[in-house]
Image (tube, rainbow over all chains, first blue to last red; front, side, top):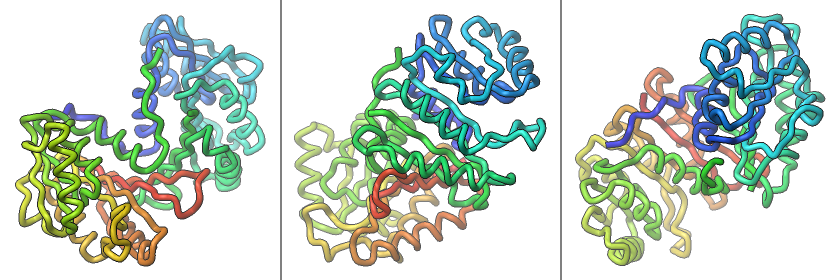
Length: 191
Length: 191
């Protein structure tokens, strides 16, 4: 019988499903918005001691929470934490990358006026894409429930939709039996 | 470094990605529309000699092509071929099932007037769902390029959208950088 898998119960579990399949020992990856550090921790575990994670967040509280989590789990040594907007990827990251993880919107439990913005999000996505290896992925969890969320989602989808289909497979994963405003996942895979 | 994976270049490769992850030795599965037999072959390989595949198709030519492929690959013994509409699942299949695979529309290279129909498709989906194990999946490749295709897609999505979110995770996977009429994948996972 099959091994029981983690249920694909939302955009973040689905992103983790693809990351677990695509990221392995020694890989270089980016967490563009580390937030509470859960994605950073998963990435650090997947790349192992020979890999490298660059994790960005504008907010000092997010960097501090992520550092604490990584130290508690004993994986802080393979993660470079950068208090910077995600559009700092090109300045700080030495690719090539196997994956880059984006969570748009605002930090859960943080200041809801501090949200990711369409221009910097699209700039950051392009920077990550430029560093992506063949077979590498960008995962983008999109939230539309806050002011400006719809506008950002439209900007991200416009950017993705223009990517050449021979070079990139671009998927939008939505849950049909959830409300329209439920978070969804966009994924870009480099061929 | 990560193992290089098969690119997720369309609805069928994405369905195969999820099937490879969810179906294993000894499982019972259904191919609701065997067509040229490619999905049936994958399922037969995944379930191994101790598993069982029921494969349906209304058209004799599809059953014959699938039988030939399975015999050539040495896996015919674990597959029961049924020349019947996919709404025959409840009459022929002894569950519980780990997966059921649907390809809507018409047989490539076959008679384009012989298409799956909304009523029988939804009936077949419900029959397969009733047999699905926790962690099991339905994959539904949806084609809208032929007459009646849009209507069938709407019926499938209406059925899926009404499934209770505590029991089922229902995903629609579309490619953003392909034309609107490109085939897409709907997946139902039982919790």
